Image (cartoon, rainbow, N blue to C red; front, top):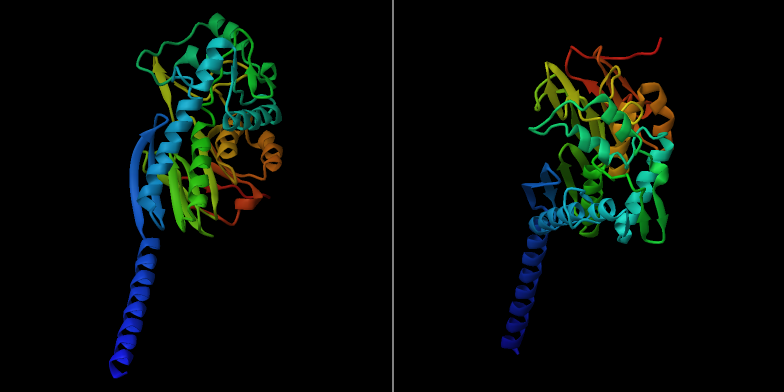
Length: 338
């Protein structure tokens, strides 16, 4: 009987030890952290993920982003958008359909300041390419006639555009990729993550993140302010992001759907924070095009907040960010109401 008791005690001790080892291993696994860099959507993708199986999840995220790119990039011949541009009608997947509906909603609510049928115009300008040449004024005028989101028709899963139109989703693609990343993070119960898709951010799992806002007059690594925000998405649009030079003048990539030329106003950049990657990306472009005053009602529709940097180095923020921004560069000044 003594032997049996000893055996029982040993077995119980072994089981307890195994449980402890298992719990410790689980805790260590959940506290894993990975930093990974890849390339997709014409941009650098950086992932900082904390949690269980984060290496596998990072691979799943980059795979999902590339899958999305293969569906919506007009540059990829086999994509749904390329097929739509070529045939003027296409049956699309449920994900692409939902995305197009959301983008059409923003086109409508921004009064066309952003327009997904801008493909012919962006192709004409070809800003950022090695072979950039200033388009002829008449060419711009004629091409602008094809830009009209209202001509996009959807019936069930069939999307149609006019004969002379082309879709370009560049104004929202990186934000859409951030939405895909969040789905995967949430599904896998990741504790914390920051996913950066070419400057569009997915902030996940914490109540407080500190994010630098780039100095639009400085180098890539320079920032002029920091935002302290919770979980959500951040995107920035500015005239410094992508441009071409011709005869000493710079032409940036944000095109006006009214004039057909790069937008000219008193803004250097607009940064938008909200609960959707698609909306944050599209809204930052729309607000840059609209300007401060006209953007306020649009931001309100999507429960979004924004930071506007003017060419006078004045900084204006919407009410929801007034206590969450800190200017770090003395050359910039936060606007104060009289």
